[in-house]
Structures are given as structure tokens and as C-alpha cells.
Image (cartoon, rainbow, N blue to C red; front, side, top):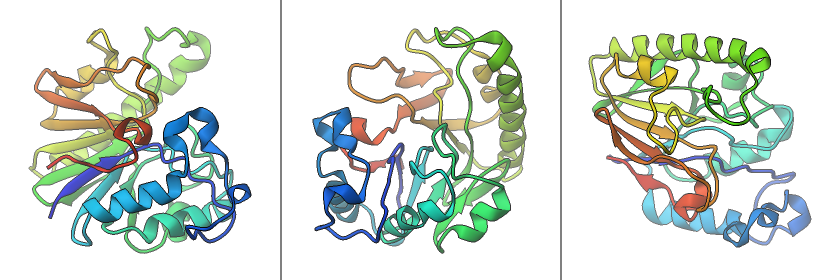
Length: 238
């Protein structure tokens, strides 16, 4: 069994997927760059080559452009049709993510949503939360963002507490990166370093030219798993 990661698929199917689906069946992601051309077919092909049914794939948010759960059903079916068991968290564009109970009920078998909880995956405890903009980010607006930031930090603490109860090294999924490209400490790191986090997998940051920290920091391996940065191929973590 292997554990893979990928994020920010931004699926947008309006009908059941097939390789010959016409372009009008989904949002034209290629407007964001050549790397998104024919991405449904390329992603499925790469996924099937790398991942087996016994493997796990961890997805750090922005799964679908859908606005409601019913609108996302073909995206869920597409994901469910790919090999492996999947773990998903909420991203900033996952507006279809309503109550946790409703999300659980709507997802096909083999897709596990995480919110304020943790599960054992092989030799690791996996937990995840959305996260938020860092206070030193240029887009951070204190009056609007500070309450959300405080709430996300509390949720992160709760998830890590539950992961620690499994007495395993932790793989943490976040949508927003918890550390900037300058490796400056953050309020998220203050929480993370209190727990045995081995990997932190995040998304949100797209494109090769957008800055994002990757590598070891305070004993944690940080990896940007956005699909376009991985050339639409799930990345083997362990």
C-alpha cells in the first residue's frame, strides 16, 4: 500500500465523464495555462498508471467548481472511478461543501471527507482542515480575515489532537500553505510543532511561477500538491 497526494483538481463535469466528452461539458481550465489542456483524460491516465486499488490518495481541497452538492455529483463519480481510496478536505472554492453529514451522505463509497477528525491510513494518522491566509499575506484584511483565522486555528488544533490520539506520525492536509516562501514562522506553525506532524500537504498555490515554500522546516516536510504543479500526476508520499 502506498499513500499519494494531489490537490486542486477543480473538476466541473455537467454530465458523466467519458474521454470523448465535448469541451462544453466542463469549465475550460485551459484558460489558466497549457498544463490544463485535456486534463480530465491526462489526469485519469496518470492516476491509473500510478495508483492501485489498495493505495490511498489524499486531496487537499478545491475538488470541484460546483456550487451545490447535486451539481458536484458527476465530479464525485469521476473521482470515485479512479483507483484507490480517497481522503478529501475542503478548499476555498468548494462551495458545494455544506454540512459534514450532508457531504458524507452524498459521496460515493471510497471517498472519505475529513473535518475536525483524524483517521489511520497505514502507519500514519491523517487529519486536515482548510486553513486560511497568513497574517503577513498581502491580501490579508484584519477586520475580515482575523475571525476566520482564529476559527481555523482552533479547528486545526482539534484535528491534530484527534490525530495524536492514534499514536502515529501525522500527515496533515491543509488547503492554504501554513508557511510562506520566506520560511517565516506563523500562527499555524505554532500549532503544528506541538504535534508529531511528519508531512504537511497543501494546495491553493498554482503555477510554477507562484512562490510557495517546499521542503523541510522544523522537522516537517511541506509539499505543494496542486495538480498543475504535479503535471496532473498523483505524488507518492510514502
